[in-house]
Image: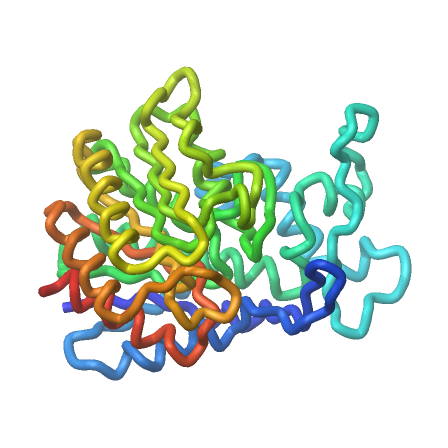
Amino acid sequence: MIQLIYASQHQLHDPPTEYAQGDMMPYPEMPARADQIYHHLAGQAGVEVIEPHTPLSLESLMAVHDEGFVEFLREISTNLEQYWHSPLPDHGYLYPEVFPARRHMNRLRDSMVGQLGYYTFDVFAPIGKGTWQAALYSATVAATGAAQVLEGQASAVYALCRPPGHHAGYDFVGGYCYLNNAALAVNRLRELGRVAIIDIDYHHGNGTQHIFWDDPDVFTGSLHADPTFEYPYYSGFADEIGGSEAIHATHNIPLPLGTDGSTYRQAVHEMIEKAAAFEPSALVIPVGLDTFEDDPNCHFGLQLDDYVYIGKAIAEMGLPTLFVQEGGYNVEANGLLAEKLLEGFLS
């Protein structure tokens, strides 16, 4: 049996546009991404849909995230019009535009608009009235999935999180991500012992790495496009191996643009060997379907049978496993790709 965890509140977050390299374009992290996967999987035999109705507490979020950061995100989204100095734009979203990077601009301000830049590292995480509820329920989906793994009643548990989470750090948002869903799931799965993360999204999970950098009980592994050429540019290099308290608990495999299924499969095996050596008791898989050859925003060449192979390789670790949805921007293909990953895992 497959348990599919889903919350319709993700639809409350629907920014209209993003600004990239001088161009305005439709925001690719759209509600249809999750809904298409939901409709594709929910009607299949052996799939049980679980929709949580009680959100995670702020206390639970603060076990992973900075208290001031969580309060900021909740407050600015819930009371958006109160903190904007002029009428809100017609599209209803605030986009960060000033980032206090210099030493004389690093003070945390009382102004919510000032904090928008302080707690943000790029322009790809706008905040609207529904952003907080969507992010909160996305985090709840992940935590609920972890709870189902702990109960052990299903062969596979798939947390259909949206917005995604792996670019959200201890105290920052970015890259379409607001709360780190995978990290919150890991925090719940600690009951079993050490936990390993194997992030198979096209982009490096910089936020997840940031949260667990000095944690010796969490293995943080990521296979992704080489950040020399691809977002997030500043993290995900092979020489990033963890902080002084957790050396070798982080392992990155940056891959060249155009990576095909054969090369990716080899990297999966390398990562699994590293994770297995950590001797974890549970596994969290941040799933990016943006490694697909026909993804419009990314540049790998994986095909359908590669996802079956990845799922099977993960299953061979023999660990309680939670899949957590991250990227994937070919809306029409996402459901089939998720199905193939689970097919491999259950075969």
